[in-house]
Image (cartoon, rainbow, N blue to C red; front, side, top):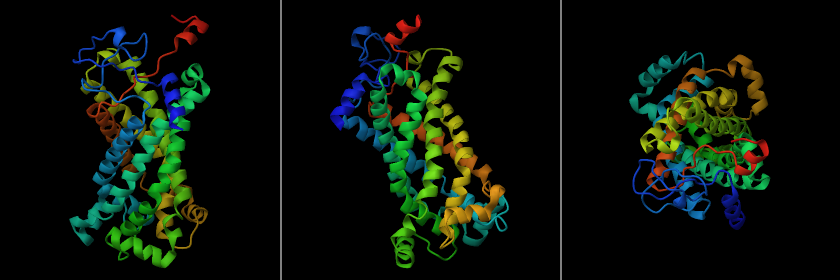
Length: 353
């Protein structure tokens, strides 16, 4: 498999354009460029990881662990109140009231409920999400050829992200179920170590996976929007907003663009995936119910409960995740390709200068 991926990586329009230089002033030479005819700055002055190698995919997974595990754990208080808004609108009337009621009943420590399954669950999800996205993006681009990969690059982003998220959610589902139990069922359990054995004892192994299908319905559209919107936003920002080419921007300036593109993508992600998120929260609270039963009971308007805090949470999360992921790539000398450029062969066919 990896031999095929390496071949695909070498021919992919998403391959790395970075060179190895010792300064960040954008002065590079065509002779040093990894991609012939293109010269842009290196991600690091140290040895750069080979694009498409096993090491590359492994380090991308590490970046995913850090970006998802850290960010989701950091917003556990907001996530807790969001989940409670979704499952008990009568008690938790709005975001600020939800915080007030939670602190009054459980103290400030109550806001941290569910941090352990959140950290471990989203760390595992991040490894698959980002690591496999890079794998599938290269593989799919190689399957359709360089020219088609450029022309239909948005479809490549969508397909790669959907494929990656399918596997990421299998890793996330058990811990997401435990998190929701802890956060939305008073007295059920206070920690992951208490929740998971009780879930197994009362409902069996299906307790951990009964929310998998609605989780796919929530996370796959979310991730497709997250990656495709981010990639296209970065492309548009460098083309229409940033006053100089990407190869002339410092690493810090590039990371600012990454953060901005991530936040824009996050807002769209929150809206697209919110109804399924409400169903997941309610489903893990209601024993013996199916996703369809929960959706019918909630109704159309009920599936939009907690949208405002989720937009705030997901927008911030997505921006920080891309910022951390890109920052990890800089720190570990992982190739960071710029927006794709039209292949020379396609330029000749279309008579584009």
